[in-house]
Length: 227
Image (cartoon, rainbow, N blue to C red; front, side, top):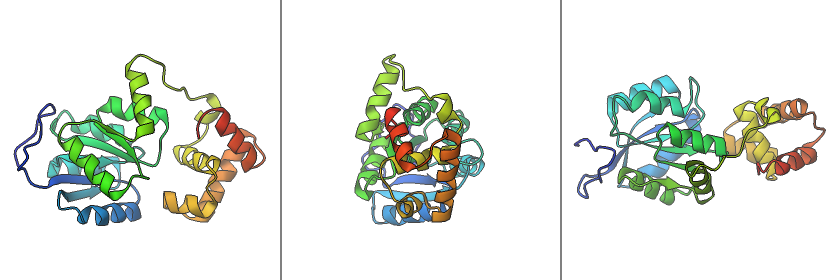
């Protein structure tokens, strides 16, 4: 398959879009791969679980689109883009993440991604998003588009305060889900971790933010527009 330059439209007769799937959760990759296997318009040609592995797989397979988690061991999704783009500028990146935080969306787009969708996306919509990115379009989940428009229009993106900076990325993800009313079992399923691990993260968040319970945590998150 011929290389597609960043500003070119994909030929209509080019065949299935070749995709590399990058996520540090094996169960999630398995689920996404099974979903995409039902779509003849997409061909998954590789997988990776961390930044270094992702760079190596992408450079070896030269896919048209990389489905990329934002938070990866070894540097994150943005680092994958920064290492790949100079060598393979025709590869396009579509972020697929549980995080819908403005700083994650804007940082990933500034690194060079062509779009950003959350893991709540349906299989059909994900296939459509992959096709659009392969065609050169920019694709965003509806709520996230506003972050990008504001950022590139010169409007200040929502800032991260010192309290939030104390939390790890996983703790932030758990915080947002708790604030949205998710039960521990639902959070464990969403993030592909155990209920015990969820409990550990919640305890750490409450301790770091000096809060007493999930109700105070929800109010804290709502006040900062994190929900």
